[in-house]
Length: 155
Length: 155
Image (cartoon, rainbow over all chains, first blue to last red; front, side):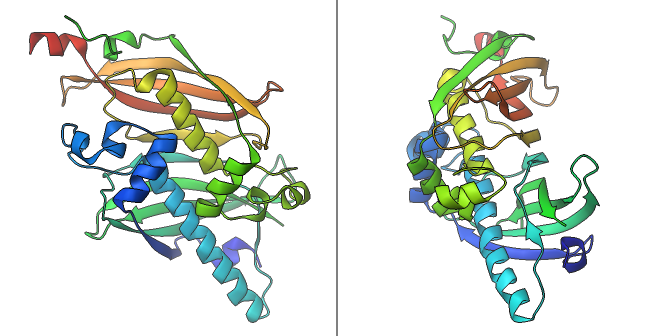
């Protein structure tokens, strides 16, 4: 089965939720994005964000983890139903990524993926390019992350 | 006395900031993937070799996070950055394999002030990272906000 058959354009799946603790935010930021508003709750008060918040890349990585967990379960479900799951390949990147709101310590982000379009790659026969809208919403219903993800699929 | 930190005015069009070098080892690829992107080609050399990536390879989100750290160390922590609203285009062009050494550059392509926030300027960059074979592995375009020095002095 192909992705576009499983999830036609406009179909939205909720992939999971992730709690961002202060400890997790600081641990990620110390490795990859050690700006004061990501590593120090006290220092963060004097910046625009006003409080400790997650690196945008941490928010993105959380989206990926939820998608993988969702996809692992979905693959199992399809196989149990006797359906061959789509064969997904690596991602060549993304577009139009927006970090719309800060993700503060204690926030829980619920992630989703909405199918946008699917087309064969003229340059690489046998490969299909799927474009999806990845999103993250906090516990107040505010969208914090939005991007157009590209996912390759083997025919 | 003017702040020695890099301000909006310092990011003139055409200015280049060097990124890296940074050698990526297997342990950090596996550590990131275990937490955020647990797919086989990011978790073991054997599974990586069997995939179209050709070896144990970093998650695209990991490469992006390492790129963030390179910007931090090159110029962001020594600037008056106010963060970035997002990423216009991100291309993961080649796999980043265990043992690869990445380096690259950020080039200023545009700079403008904001009517709505007169003390902030927006600088647009084109960024790229290449491996030790000279192959471009990551390319992106985005805008970053910086405080304007002129405004600070008159404040």
